[in-house]
Amino acid sequence: MLYIKDFLLQLLFALTPFVLYTIYYRDKAENYSRQFITITCMICLFMSMSFPFTVEDGIIFDIRYVIMFFGMVYGGMTTGVFLLVEFLTYRLLIGGQGLFSAIIILSITFSLSALLSNVYRRRSEYRKLITFVAGFSFSVIPIATMFVTEYQYSIQHLKFNILVMPVLNFLGIWILISLFNKAVSDKELYLRYLQSEKSETIAHVAASLAHEVRNPLTAVMGFLKLLKDDSITREKSQKYIAICLEEIKRTEVILSEYLSIAKPNHAVVEKIELVQQINSIVEIMTPYAIMNNVSLEMQHLEDKLYISANPTEIKQLFINFIKNAIEACAVLATGNVNIRIERQSEYAKITIIDDGVGMSNEQMERLGIIYFSTKSKGTGLGLTLSYQFIRSMNGDVTVRSKSGEGTEFILTLPLTN
Ligand code: ADP
Ligand code: MG
Image 1 (cartoon, rainbow, N blue to C red):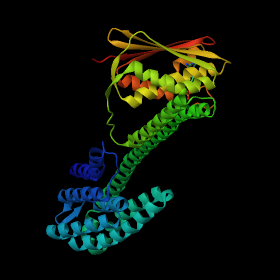
Image 2 (cartoon, rainbow, N blue to C red):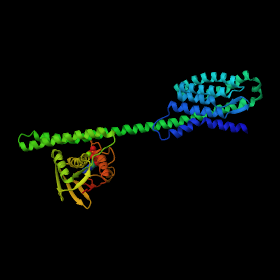
Image 3 (cartoon, helix red, strand yellow):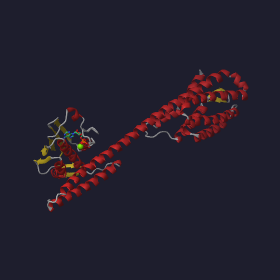
Image 4 (cartoon, rainbow, N blue to C red):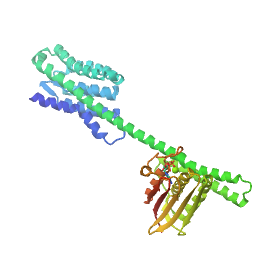
């Protein structure tokens, strides 16, 4: 009965590294370090040597070989040396009859642990075999040595030596290594998932960057085409050049904003006059509409409507909706895009209507989902970003559409004083 209690206690000690690992690394985005292995193994060795099996005064048994092997597998030689020093110091302090045998056994098992742990780390296909060999040797070597050095004792406690020690060593090694391995590989999987999530986000950002730069480029290209016309008045050409410059400047702002996306977002929220803002975007998008044989018009019932928003986001938002509306008409030979701005109690209501291809119910349900696009050169990022912007402004967006008839996007954005 006494053996069972000691036996279970030693098994419990053998689990220390695993238990501490699960507690300490639970919420950490990193895996175990060598220092961690060294420290937990040293605690474990200390505990198991402090409360060992004693079948005869001066002769003690514990799971030291298990810890030594485990420490060397996960912490390497340095951990092994730390444990060796700890063991020798503590064993000398304890003293007693078995000291001499203990040192002989340890010198053999230490070298064997170094060898086995080395193979264990390098050849994953032999791991099960090595765990078995370790458990076996750590049981046979002490028994054989004791047979030579402490013959009397060995014969007296033959049953204990042959039954209890091997079971303890095998169980200890097997439980500790398999549980720890499982915890470590689960963590690795989690870390890899985190990493791929991160790189995926970066990929999304890079893709949307290309998308957002393409919009102003399209506008600049349209104006340059208009400028090529010799009959254009000087006043008009000056205006077009000014718009081109403004667009290029905006592209630069967008680029630097996206480059800073990895850092915390210090979005500047400004008071923006919406009517004038949308008017300038309509102007920017006009060349694109003309190129696609689409008429683009805007009506407003109010002269001034103020909202709080990030100016770059607001521009991108309306460019995305207007561009989509133009593209929906472009598929047909001709079309109309209409933008209406009005006030609705505390909100600005902006309606973007087109008589383009429209959408089916299935398509409407997928709106705003990243990469959803029905265009051959579409990115499916425009609406994803726009929906995000609207949400961040506490606004709302609804859509009504009929396949073959056209689409109506209604945006409501909270007004500010
Ligand atoms: P992209 O324009 O690159 O395809 P968006 O996110 O801007 O990506 O739009 C996603 C999809 O939503 C489009 O491919 C299109 O199928 C649909 N869509 C958006 N606006 C309209 C519209 N006004 N009329 C018809 N379909 C639209
Ligand atoms: Mg789009």
